[in-house]
Image (cartoon, rainbow, N blue to C red; front, side, top):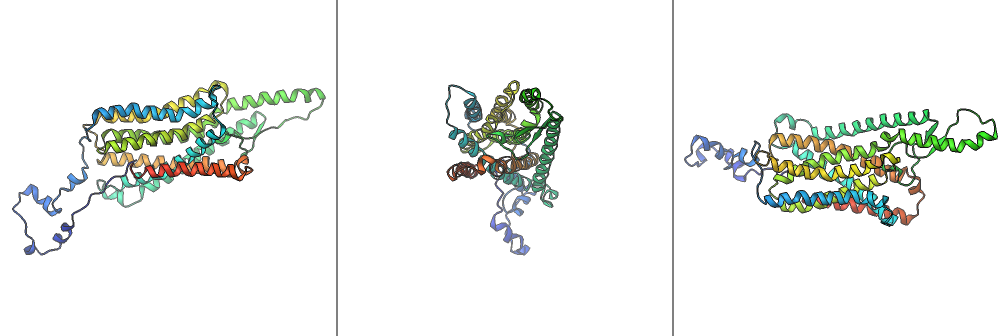
Length: 385
């Protein structure tokens, strides 16, 4: 989540450790302070602060205000694409939606590597952890486990959805992606009728289009779970990350810098989530799902901040327990966003998208530029958070 600063052992400590006993000039010490001198003049536990104990309580009123500021920024970023695409009075150009969509893809990919995987690895390499944690790259293993777990979940959901469509007399083109359909991978592409009986009269020819249209609607209704699985996986990974951000921000010592950075971070990330939800064309009775998804994202970080403020006297973000919890969750979330970003967003928006493959060079350059801009800005924010 946030990179931790590793303790620096004073230079003199290494030289002193190798001097003969007679050459060392030690001051008069008490037994309780002898360990401090051997460690080079600093208590190892004090430097690492591995135990319990509260975080910073400075700027308490500003930390409370951060709950509402980040709530507004997160909700605006996530809700704007959803509301704008459905609204009849907001005439937003399609190029703006395209920018938000591709910009959000870059944000999500950068978040996975810069804001999740690297801090997660750093947390699991903390000197507060026992030696066993340093004998194996658990962070990479957890990320790998997460990637394959999400792959299996989507594979099962996709097979179930395709089987359901076949039972309804519909087939799915696995690589057919119409405009916006790739917001959530699943049986959302090109559908075609598969009549089980040959037509025997002109009357059946007349009735067939209506029957196919009805079957198409039924197929969409019954396949809602598969249609939202891609966006659901993406949001799950982001929500885990957002809660940890809130907890850490509530007790962080360098609060003011992190506060400004996280406002931009959550707004950009919300734009990425919102653009996916906006293009999730669900049947009428499920239209509320996109709004709910945007609100869930907007609430997670403020809830994390509120929880962190509630336990600020006992929660230590540098403790052993916090390092394990944040490290494990960050690495798992990184795997989710790496898979979703590279497979669901990057591959399906460019390689498997027929519209993009046949698009003009200018449109392709616009999409790539938007994505690179989002990725670059989010990666730059990693310098401070």
